[in-house]
Image 1: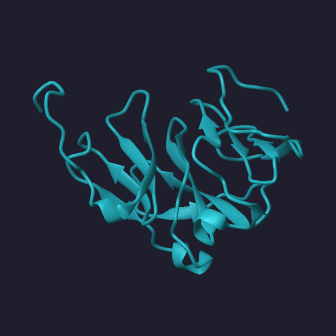
Image 2: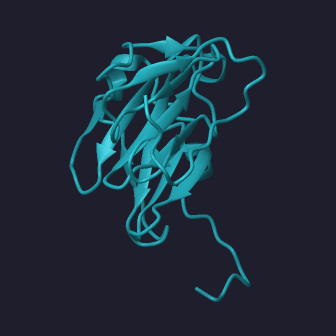
Image 3: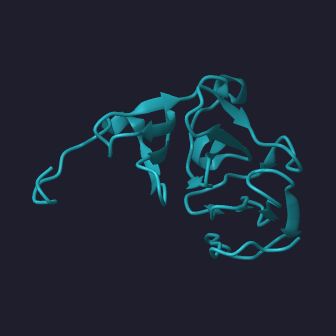
Length: 166
């Protein structure tokens, strides 16, 4: 509000935000947090927490988030920081609900999907799970294929603006 001279919290500290991303061309901000997916349509002044349906996982804790053109992908860990398994969920921008991403992904991925372990461009996404398995979507958040396994010491994943072939 004042060109960055002062800062103020936008969400309560107990939301425990892990990663924040802004959409490339829309005025939407998303945050992966302990309370679920937090979404703001006004630059962070107000936030909606999207977690309906996550109760089935025994945890709403999200560590990673990424934007495709029309959807947001975010991780959900089963067991928090020391999770043995995780899932990827999506929110279609403008929609009212979130849903688990499957279309080629197993119901549970290995270990946690940590901060910087989901990457996306407008056309496709990549996921790196806690077991060092790398997954790439064919288009949007569909048609997933595992393209690498047991990657040692992998600390994140990135995608260029171009689509990759499977």
